[in-house]
Length: 503
Ligand code: FAD
Image 1 (spheres, helix red, strand yellow):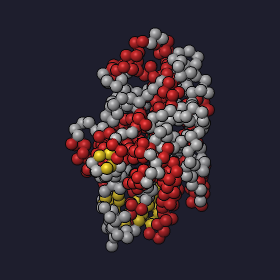
Image 2 (tube, rainbow, N blue to C red):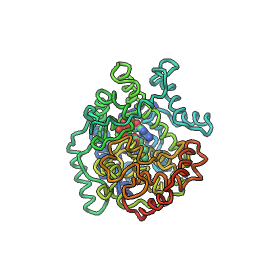
Image 3 (tube, rainbow, N blue to C red):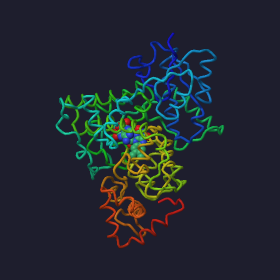
Image 4 (cartoon, rainbow, N blue to C red):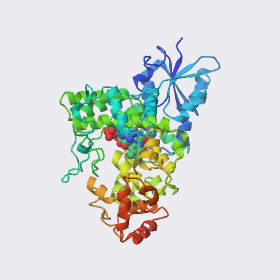
């Protein structure tokens, strides 16, 4: 008899029950466990809790009689309920967090199968990384993935002759418009499963059993395979062409711009990365989308997403508690509570409201508005990681750790990036329409209208002058400190907003 196959809540696409490539047994019965302890442990964004439960229940509905859907306090209890006292074994695809991997490998009757949902198997990455000594740079990795998987390649050469079209993809937003006017993004219509999820979440919250941050609203992201494919089709067919050019730009009234909104579907396992990049490549070959957009999108998925996944495992458990810059400030209440109305700085208030209302923003607000605020103000990186994990619909342990500890907070001291990502208000002003209506001025470092990002940027450089002076990508910025005649006033200004006051 086939072994029962256990699906975690982020293993919801058809590839997770496909017996080929090290998958489960043919016609394996399936078990899914909805563990309440997961929601009780952490205060998640309401939209995220909704999306994950809705997606799990949609999957169970699609699997019909083949699945046993168990509601239990913990995974172990749920599994015990399914298996009883017999000797039957269970299979599970390699889970996506260290905690879950530890759990399944410690269970006697569970056989762990290879990971699915990524392009590069773990053993292959390990061989590549070992061959590259300490220098695991994203760009080198990405080119290797392109070559190995023949993605956007013409023979041994990158399609179009260049590997990297990033410099075509960093344009400021057009100045004369509030929105990009991209083709409309795909949004789902809720169904009776969503109604049931909403009812359950309301009840658990009322009972004081769980609590959430953020606002409830109509589900905004795919919860089943059909929806995920619709979202992918709409993106590739109508929105991909403009993806590249304004990839790093922000517009207050257009939070999505030309981004794909596919991260949550990918991370729930509803889409496989290979189908996303293959469809994007086909759009380019068919003349439907320009190379800069297609390369930019392929780079995000076959480059960044894969790279982050493998670094998560490579860097080990201690990575979680890295704090190279010695940052220990607690997260202020207005940030924890997503209280956008308490914030004066227009960029931060706008982005925080997006998170509060939807559980999503694109990568530049995450990095250069939210993450940068945390970095400049010296907030504890583990608490910042936990905040991102709970508040974003696409947040999972594997993807948060490298992105927040490494990329955003530089708490790993440069294992992942070559420099800290933070800036003064000038960058935000150049890349968005957020500064014009702001009470602060990006050019002011001191005084009533000093921009907290401009003040914070220099205060950050000053605080970490010694660590950063040796970094050749930061040396010039650090030298800039010597030219600031108002540095003492600036530092005073930065210090005056202590005690968790909202900027
Ligand atoms: P698009 O801009 O359309 O990009 C396409 C796809 O590329 C995304 O769907 C995603 O799957 C992938 N991708 C791009 N960059 C990354 C990356 N750095 N890591 C992983 N995948 C990437 N992404 C998450 O999926 N989950 C997270 O928890 C997450 N946390 C982040 C935290 C910080 C501080 C930063 C700077 C980035 C984080 N990202 C995370 C990466 C990125 O911001 C999101 O993947 C992206 O904004 C999702 O929107 P989209 O699907 O429209 O992306």
